[in-house]
Length: 539
Image 1 (spheres, helix red, strand yellow):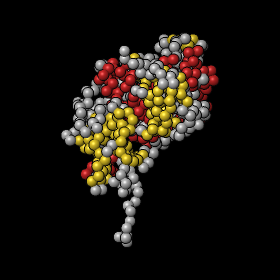
Image 2 (cartoon, rainbow, N blue to C red):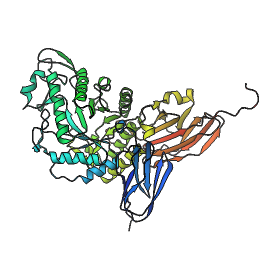
Image 3 (cartoon, helix red, strand yellow):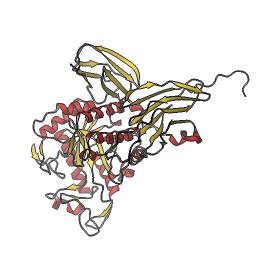
Image 4 (spheres, helix red, strand yellow):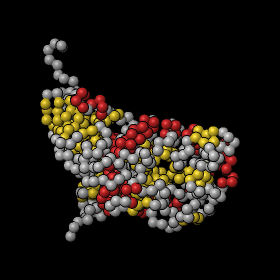
């Protein structure tokens, strides 16, 4: 009989430095050793007798991997809970629904914020349906279930954010607000089909109403904040009174107005295709969130979008909503590879992806109710990648990380690079190559290697081929002191914990042989900056 692997999960999605860390063990066959590592180095071993919650006590800030035999999880300790946002979603508010699966998925994937999509009665009348109602698209909602889901989030340390469209009014309420309409040049109200009509989000009477609705919902239901949504248009419009509206400026005014009404709320505004990140990122909100659509279809576009967002974010977490429609048109194995490439790109550029939610769902459509139930292999892959990003959080999401590829790699610089026997290494995401990126994290360097060999293109939302094997790589590094650097690598598919690489010395350089990556390989370099020993007179 095949032994059943135990399940280990943290009790919370994130911890503060003074909080004891708990690891729940379920399905253990008996005694075992729970091991915790920080960036690959063992920091704690605890003997367990069987199932139960293991108290590991408080630990310093950072990301940690946890292992019990073949079972894996990760934990994160941060000083400020809002300095990170791994974003999830829920959509099912039927009476008396089961909540255990949601709770466990939040812990499994370490989702620190949850968007409550389409929980409200109507877009301009959030609480008008009483305790039980059908939403604007006839989905059943029980506010008792909404409150229970919020409590589930709180139990595991996640924030519950209610969805709210910042300028959308339904047909029933339109007569009350059409004086604030955003109009086309031909005097037609901008709309989302014939379902919702758009108003100036900064109109004084609308903003007072909208922020008041949010405050009432917080008091009545218990949300920790709000996901402030828009549709990406218009950029400029005019009102019935003839005034021209710069919608980017109106969004910034709206965010400030909501912040004034809800000073302690966690606010996340949606920048559709980067509109208007340049303006909204500086507004008083708690993340920079971008929903991507064509023409942002390439992996390089994801990388550029994340990089621009981090520049504008000034330390706020960056989230990219990249819906993997590929699951609707390709076998799970090919779609899983597409998701791997998306996550590898975003994680390695310091952003997370809004993708996962409920107990076992991922997003494949902007109407979140049309989601995709994952297969077991997909669930296992997501578990690995989210554990990997949490365990290596300092190397991925520190706001002070600098891109140094162009300064270090290549023949002119000759400071740090990776080569393969027959595979090309490129600085951009190009099909048929290994995509290389180098970052500086304090005194350390991180090399990201994303394997695009065997791909016909570099689209992020398209079926992917199994990556070709580039063979072993050679990392070559100019020494920065008399002592040898420390070089380690990890790979979420093949080697989830950083392991040491043997170094070969060649004068002022050292080299190491890297195992071939599958999709994404991370290499950590910790140089020695010790000065050379001096003898005799200085030169």
